[in-house]
Amino acid sequence: MENQLPDFTGKSVVFYATMPPGAPDWLVEGIVLESASFELQNDRVFVVGRTPPQDDDDSESDWNADRQAAIAWDSVYYYVVMTTHEYREARKLQAVGDSAFEPEDGSEPDGVAKSTRNVLASLSLFLIGVVIPIAIVIALILWIVKMM
Image (cartoon, rainbow, N blue to C red; front, side, top):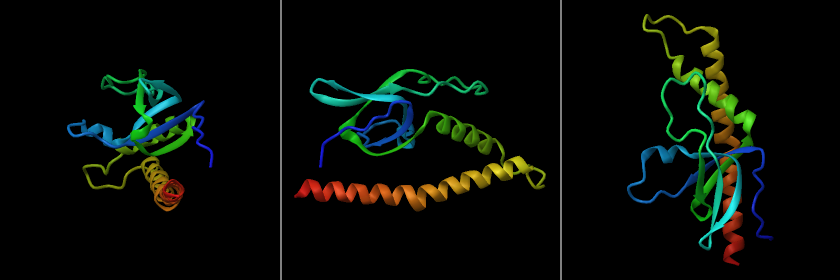
């Protein structure tokens, strides 16, 4: 098996990495880099890319939006690759879903909120039912190959 690094050109990648003690909690949610590439820095391989830009309708300042960032490749234990367009659409849906909670008067939420929840539920089921098991199988295969 060749030791070839993936090509993330034109993609958005959510990286999940081992966290050192004292790391901020927001790192647990994953680190997103767009059009990431690999760089060797002090004999260590890093994935380097740009963090996504801040949404136009986001009123809170995001200190790390649209910045160059890097993550040590040897600390990555899981990653999800999608087109940048897919990632940005999913982010918009998540923002709508976050603001589309049940109304205080107890009435049913509007159809947009329901469809958003349906899309997010489908995406969650897809991740749980397909992507995560595939990632586990790949990790097991890599582990077995490494142990040989």
